[in-house]
Amino acid sequence: MTSVYDFSAVTLQGETVALSRYAGKVLLIVNVASECGFTPQYQGLEALYKDYQDRGFVVLGFPCNQFGHQEPGDAAQIGEFCTRQYGISFPLFEKIDVNGPQSHPLYAWLKTEKSGVLGSQSIKWNFTKFLLGRDGQVQERYGSTTKPEALRRDIERALQSNATEL
Image 1 (tube, helix red, strand yellow):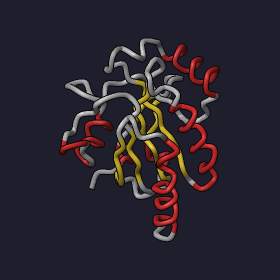
Image 2 (image 1 turned 90 degrees about the horizontal axis):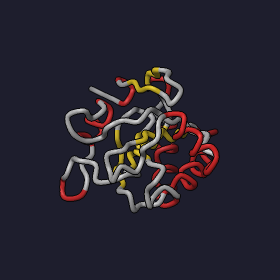
Image 3 (image 1 turned 45 degrees about the vertical axis):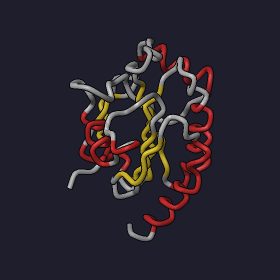
């Protein structure tokens, strides 16, 4: 059975990271953008990360320029913006496609594991979120309008339900 741990991604610093590095953690995977109406969600994502990281929770941010060209910068610009504007300390990866023929394999898998509204697989906009349990499987998918703070109950449940199974 495929899990998130079967994939790898390249960080903003150019390091290829096997996502198995996060084995046993609860993950929130988000496609992000610096010039989007939802960009202020970075603040909420960072708050979740800070509040839960000691319990085994990690946010993974994947910049994407496919929606309104709202992530035009290169890796250095994206990293600088996220640090300066929001103090982001969670892992950020290189800019990827989340839809179409060049879709990152991780996102191709995420979309098949949990469809969106009305069964649609495609990502509709920036800041679509996927919550994964400690087993590396997708538990929930949330649209762009779902604010990070609204995920606390589901994150708590994921942290508690998987802790006894390890």
